[in-house]
Length: 134
View: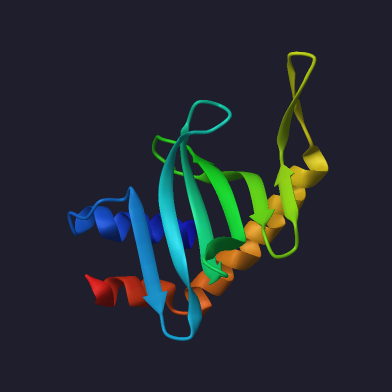
C-alpha cells in the first residue's frame, strides 16, 4: 500500500496528524486512514477503509488492517480484511491452544487484494484529492 504511505508522508510533511485522515474525492466513497494501536506483532497498526452509512450505521466496504514496519524501508503488511455488506471478516493470524497460527493462503489473498486496492487509490485520484484538501 505504497499510496497509503504516500498520503501519510504528505500529512506528516504538512504538519497534519496521521491519527485520522478522511479523504473526500468526488463520486468515490470517502477513504479513511486511521491509526489503531498495535498489530499482532506489536508494530504500529493502521486501518484503511471505505465507510458508507446504511440505516444510520457505518458499514465497511472494505476495511483492511495493516502492520507498518519501521526502519529504512517502511512497508505495510495486511492482517485483517472485513466487508460488512458481504458479511466477510477474515484474519491472517489465529490463536489455537495458545499458539499463534498463520493462514498463508489468507495472507496471500489479502496481499493480492491490497495491491489491487493500492492501484485503485492512485488511479481514482485520492492522493491528489488529499493534497488539494490541505
